[in-house]
Length: 207
Image 1 (cartoon, rainbow, N blue to C red):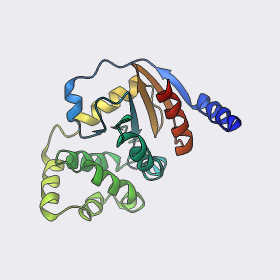
Image 2: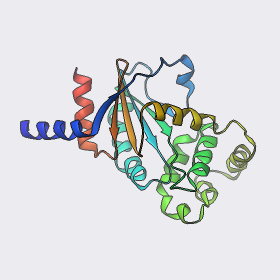
Image 3: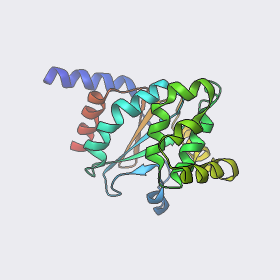
């Protein structure tokens, strides 16, 4: 076990780096539909993703469910999703983010985000995100979401805010994770397998 822990720590040392602390958050953050977990959790994991990024899909499907069950649902860590759009590479990513964020306004962010990532292989070929989302929502819900996507001039505000913070965090790829504890922001570049992420989080929680 000792050798394994050293190996995991060494791997994380290659992936992580500290970034300047962000300005203190306000009480409004608790109402952010992209934020889940206890507000008294000692740590926050911020996850920068692009809906059209295959590695982000892997993180969302292979890592975040276990992380959420073990750390978020138990009050140990808050989880904050952040949009970081690589539009020069992914032509449908903004539309995908708009559908997810429109769903967020209706309390359906997690459900729709999961569906968008799960069906990435389909809509990334033709941009038909609407059809993918319609499979998990009612007709009435889809009518509301389509109206928000088409007419809400402030729908992209959270994306703008996320990307501004991402630039402060020196994000240059997706996914990128930022662990926030005691005002310190530590960046992890790229996809991180769950066992390594778990080991790192456990070490921080133990301090």
